[in-house]
Image (cartoon, rainbow, N blue to C red; front, side, top):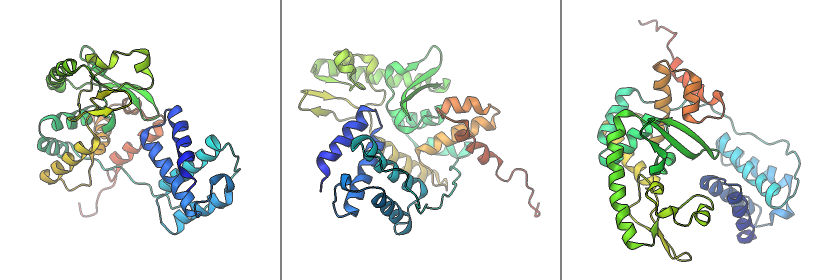
Length: 317
């Protein structure tokens, strides 16, 4: 496969432009599949006809969703434009997968309460934080001590989707629990200091600019992972944040125990946050800013959730 060197170039390009890890994994995955589909031919020897054939194959033979098909096309076009520097022109006659508009799953307030009740300890705090702030799961788990402002009751969300920072609310009811969690992190940090070569990873090239920042309490994750990550090249053990999958599994167990009959996930707490704010009379622009949506049109989907069936009275009633 002509892949390894080429894929490394794609990774380097994506990381240089600060694309998320999820986007990197998705683009790399689609480029691999594109190469394999065409018998391991080098992409430089192919063009728009081969791209069209692969994208149509996804729609016709694999029946992928419209968003999946679009992601595959974007990943392959990124390869040609940014790595191979080859203009493939406008790709016509693409068979588009049917775009189905799904409304988000939203829990009512009692359902949220029932699920959160089934989450215990640290997991309960994480769940309450996601519902109370509207953060995505990865945003909540990446929080550092310096991101909480107890005086102004705000949370600074760093590097959210689209590499954007934003501010969201810090619920009063969570202040004491968060301070207790920070105390636990502080005790763990004291143990780190004794070991000397344990620190929190820093974003981008900040470690070069501030070599000791990773050892400062302010930069420690609020929800640290139990195990350390050792980077042999640097000779440093990093204490990273809790992995998403750990909370996702606990949330699924809590959902089952709560007997809430909905296909909910941690992200459903974010949908519920937005919907309940609109129910309580907050304007859509405020909700848009708290969620970090680029366009208010994205936020408007929650108004559709609120409007379902409200203006129609059943003939049975």
